[in-house]
Length: 329
Length: 263
Ligand SMILES: Cc1cc2nc3c(=O)[nH]c(=O)nc-3n(C[C@H](O)[C@H](O)[C@H](O)COP(=O)(O)OP(=O)(O)OC[C@H]3O[C@@H](n4cnc5c(N)ncnc54)[C@H](O)[C@@H]3O)c2cc1C
Ligand SMILES: Nc1ncnc2c1ncn2[C@@H]1O[C@H](COP(=O)(O)O)[C@@H](O)[C@H]1O
Image (cartoon, rainbow over all chains, first blue to last red; front, side, top):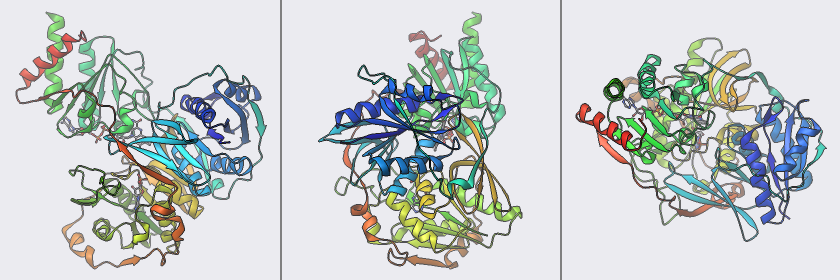
């Protein structure tokens, strides 16, 4: 018997999509190694019986619910540690995001377990689960095998598809667990959660995205991206990397990537973006990817359809002019 | 207060990183350097010291790695650390993330730091998680990807971007914080600091010195076995234009977009 325990993140009474993906994946893989998939939720009153039971639709048979602070990793480690020690799960599985990384790694330390992060595929082999993880800027894939009692798998964002298996039980059984939180878990306190910084722009409906990164040089550099988007027409919008959002150059609502949005427009034109994995995961499904970067070795060229090695300060204004001229003429 | 900064030696960004087909581990030959993400952690420590809100008695750079890793420590010292600790032992080679974090926590324990700072990721390992492992062993609160820190007494107010936007979290020291690269702009070391770095105290610890249980580290003590390296599905290489004459480049981009009916 090899049961899989997943953690399901939520906010304001709604579950996180990547967590639902983890439950679906956990249920599918647990079945392949003769086990069941269970879920842990930690939070307040919005975790109602009815809401928790819906995890059954994705394949979880039991949901362990603990009252505790939301959005912090270490209290969840306390809960999962407790649940695993009582029920003996063989694997713990997390969807992509930020919290899953912290919980998974901390749980590995707590239970002396092996952990693999950024996993893009899980499969059953000889009655065990093995995890595939791209390494070295996605140039190789490494396969993890687990030793010991517990194996921890942390998915890459969007790696696990949300599925509602036919064989799903319907409503999951909800079990309350009371946990004494460890002293160090209690030494962190959420002051504000999920603050949206900057204007509330809508980029998800855009067919064309002009995305800007640190290569734009400063906040004012985004004017070049906005001008180009305007020249493309009203189906175009401007997106950004985390580096520039953290720097306050552009609104968070326009951020693409692991802790931002996932998009798949017809055209994604990246200007001054290096192409870090956490950015790539949010835009790699775009139909056409064009990149302008002055560094010929920038990782973004590894996954762009058209790459321009050059200075965006030269290329963008002229490209904008060329598109405007076409429209006018 | 005492701040320990975890630093790592990694292949220089210009060196192509690869797996040694014989050992199945990262190829450690070629030019090596201090992990660039760690310079933000050192800078954050320096800014706490220079901020004057608390008195920082010591900033200690700590690494686990082979003999050559002393160079990364010297770089860390040239950037502001007062001294360094080098945990090195053949028995530690091949440790996975959990084992590395455990070993580092043992080396840190004897320092009793008030704050442990780390970089957001190592350029070669890209695990993002050593901090979370270290924190559990040290029984300290922990956050990763922090881009703003404010210290008042023993309360550290941190900001970071998580799944739903920006979170502000307060932790009580001692704590383990991994900083995002947007937190600051690291300074360049002065020539004097570079020259002086070799003279600052460097303590070498074996696994036994640090009180590490040999059964929990190294390839044998690791609970994950990585291997069977393979290539990802091949994707046809994109077209590349070197921009020499921008008018011609732009004409080619427009033609390319036109062909795909994108304009
Ligand atoms: C847990 C975690 C979550 C993350 N989540 C996200 C996320 O959601 N989204 C995200 O984007 N990132 C995310 N990141 C950060 C990510 O790792 C990168 O740091 C970030 O994407 C880099 O942004 P950038 O490409 O703008 O900057 P850089 O990496 O600094 O790249 C700037 C590029 O601009 C080029 N350039 C400079 N000047 C010019 C010029 N004049 N002309 C042309 N090119 C120029 C440079 O050659 C360089 O390649 C996350 C990281 C972690 C660890
Ligand atoms: N061997 C090591 N010695 C000291 N610090 C390390 C080591 N490996 C990782 N770190 C620290 O942990 C951070 C995150 O690394 P990683 O989890 O490997 O991405 C790095 O930026 C370093 O600060």
